[in-house]
Amino acid sequence: MPIGLNDFKDLLRKYFATKNAPDEGDKKSKLDDIKMEIYDSYLNENFERNSNVSAAKSKVMEEFFMEADKYEKKYVKSARVTPFEIAKESNRHALACAIEFTQAFPEKRDVLLKDEIRSIMTSLRASKKKKSKKRKFRSRKRKSKRKKSKKKSKKRYK
Image 1 (cartoon, one colour):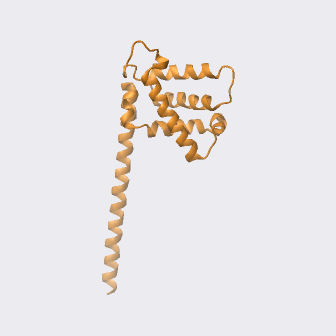
Image 2: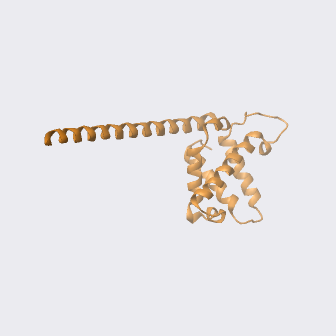
Image 3: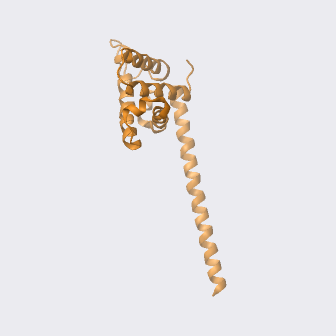
């Protein structure tokens, strides 16, 4: 599977939707399949590796999905939705949660990811920071221009 941010978000969307769906006979196997697909394509398999443990019980798998579940709880609280609403595809809450999770993924936890996806997410963070700095600078410029024009107009009327 090609490593791309959109594919990663799509797998996370499937994970959140499946996890919150009502219990069905094959829900656990679907979740395990999604987790393994994420593990194979996006997670750093060398993270605190223990060769005696299966991939499903590996440290990287546990910690990554602990982060995902922690963020999901935060999303449910902030968006004021129920887990059932996340499970409904038509609401698009699972997709929103996946997108926000990838954007808010803690930089200190990047070691959980493979190099390829880590570099993509790092470059996105860098461009996001650049944009916010540009906006701050522009707004400061505009404010200083406004102050100067007000001072000039006051001097004219005195």
